Length: 211
Image 1 (cartoon, rainbow, N blue to C red):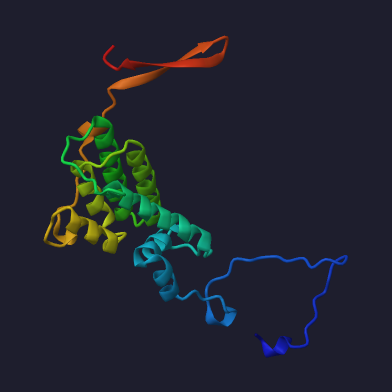
Image 2: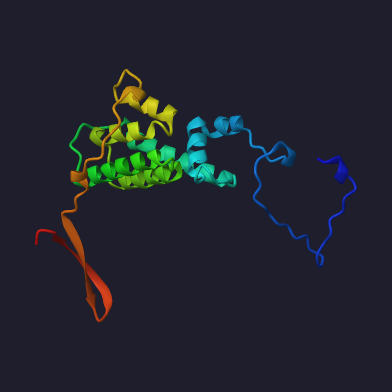
C-alpha cells in the first residue's frame, strides 16, 4: 500500500474501469518480487531451476508467469512415472527398441549442443518432447532411462540423484560419464511415401530406403 495514493480515485471510461498490463522487471520498488523460497516450498527446487531456464534466452528479460511453473512441474512428474507406477519401481533390463534409441540419441545431440551455446530453454523443451515420446512408447528400460537421467542431472539435480540411487548406483550421478550421441541410431531406414488421389493426400505407405 502506497500512502501517497490514500485519497486516489479511479477514473472510469464510459462507466467502466479499463485495466492494462505491462512487463516489468522484478524490483522491490515495483513490489513485484517473487520469493524463490515460496516456489521451492510449493513445487521443489528442481521445478524452480527448470522453469527459470525454460523462460527464454539468458540475455533477455522474461515475464514471470506462475502458470508455466505448473507445466514444468508436470514434466518432472512424467519423468518420475517412467520409473515408477502404482506397483512401484518398473525399470527393466530389456533391450531397447530402435525407436527408443532414436529418441534418446536425438535428445543427447540436441542437449549437448544447447548447453555449449547456453541455450537452456531449448534444451528443456527438447527434454519435454523426448519424455513425451518415451512415455507414449511405454519405455521403462534401463538402457534408455540411465542416460536420460544423466542428461537431466545438470538441470534437475535433486530428482535425478534420487532416481540414480534407485537405479542401484551408490556413487553420485555427477561422477557418471556424460552420454555421447551415436549417429548410427539416427539413420533413417524407412521413408513414408505420400499417396495422393485427385490432388488430395489419401494415404501414406512406408517403404525401405534401400528400395
